Amino acid sequence: MTQDLPVTLKGSAGRIEAVISLCSDKPKGIAFINHPHPLFGGSMNNKVVHTMNAALLDANWLTVRHNFRGVGKSDGAFGNGGPETQDMVGIIEQCLALPQVQQKLNNLKPQIIYAGFSFGSFVACKATYILEPYYSFLVGTPPGKWYVPFPKGKSLLIHGQLDEIMPLNDVLEWAGQNSSYVAVIPGASHFFDKKLTILKKIVFEQASLI
Image (cartoon, rainbow, N blue to C red):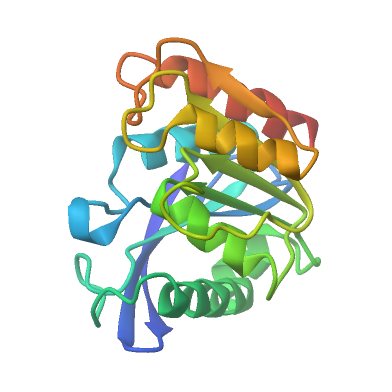
């Protein structure tokens, strides 16, 4: 049985609202999950974020979800990705120092996963150049909207075939330039309506292999 632990962390603009979810078994490591665009209703309660969170917990990873600056109880205002990236790195460092997390990880240096949806994957990609994770799950990535640096380290790109916000062709071109591949979910929209079960299966299976 998993346990959700609400915490208040420190960001560059003040408080950051977060939830740490503790998996029931001995964890493989810890995953940090970023939500979609704050100015368009994105929050850590987004259904795609919840789906990735559930998949990672089932695969025995601790998870951390947080609200970007200006969302929910997090202080500050939208910063177009730069401040959000700095906040993410700070959140990782703070979470790894928490007694509840250290106890669950047996005080060992853990493997770290980044996971992000849409704008959240953009932030995750940027963060890999400050603190490189072991693996990244990048869902609905927006290289056609912003300059998205290709992530350092191992990664899996997941995209909907019928994504109406972040066109699949943009992601395929971006991935091709970086000699990577994309897991395409047939018939899936940007928010993976009626396809969340498939998304969860992909994330779970890959996270179980790490």
